[in-house]
Image (cartoon, rainbow, N blue to C red; front, side):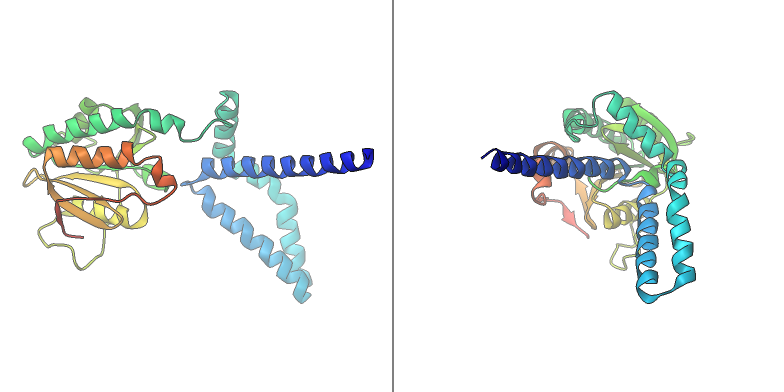
Length: 275
């Protein structure tokens, strides 16, 4: 009987061990998601695959080279992943590494919506062109790096001042990350879709472009007409009223935030669809 008890606790211990390793890996992936480290991880995977194939095919020289890369690659990984490792240690020190990853994002959703709606309404009335992209599950760190880092608490006043014409940061996109203004004057990829209306300018093409490669929600204020538009999943919805815009943004960022992790949010937009 004692032997059976020992075997039972051994299985429990093994299961806990596997779950803890899985959880730590999951947290590390969340930390590096959306950064260039993802591409580096793919490179490491390629090296491991080449190493295995070299042994299987008997390629002695190639196998030796890959083994040297693996042996001395640990130091290189520490240097290459230094920002991500530092971020993980900082979160561990604050007790946030094992906390629920989305809690800090969820707490500020309503504040983010109010700030964007208020700023958009102000700029639309005065025909101040604006481009605001809100990061969601797909990381946008590579696009943030193309702009001027701000890392500021979001407010309508800050957004309005950024897009005032002839100011240093007005030309480009603002990217909101975890309810903070991460950067301004960012470059977004332009959509190459042949179905885009000829009357749409660079801001709308950039909004569509980023929606084609990420799951971000992007807001556009037209400088020519003052019209409010929004893009998501490669679709452009134009000429939204302030109330429609607020309702849709609230539904997407607040109401449906938690449910998006289980299923795709449904958009019931009444605006003109030019996707």
